[in-house]
Length: 193
Ligand code: GRF
Image (cartoon, rainbow, N blue to C red; front, side, top):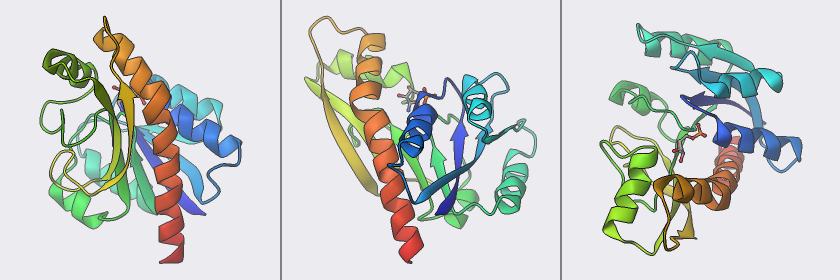
């Protein structure tokens, strides 16, 4: 198993999908060992605590230094960004190249990059009038949402969709399915390497 850290900023529904998948025994190569948030009130931290996973909030000051120390101390081999809204430095992403993945709520290269996060992604998709959107899991590099794509899953846009309704459908029908699958696939690869 690969000891895995999940970085979060908000509600943690993607973290919950990882936890539930692990509990069903469907993510055998991933050991959820640590959850770190850059937001003190993130409900994701509560989700981690309820599942007995070490949960830490790191303040803005010296965030990456403290994060590196935590990752080191816990012997982490894979990082999963799950609704994590802080940009990580080029230094950090280079150090973790091939061992850090992110879930983005669109079919990259659409509606991604600088400024595209959370509901803004779905508002942009609705404004453009796309009939299909979805989610993408990709490796993280120094370009926001720029790394190699690992998995994608399409979701239909329905007439009358609000950004909130579309976000919920993309989470339920795409994010919560492909993130655990991608984490397992990458962890398996890392175990064999
Ligand atoms: C959501 O917009 C989701 O689409 C994206 O990050 C945001 C929060 O996700 N991946 P979560 O509920 O904190 O996992």
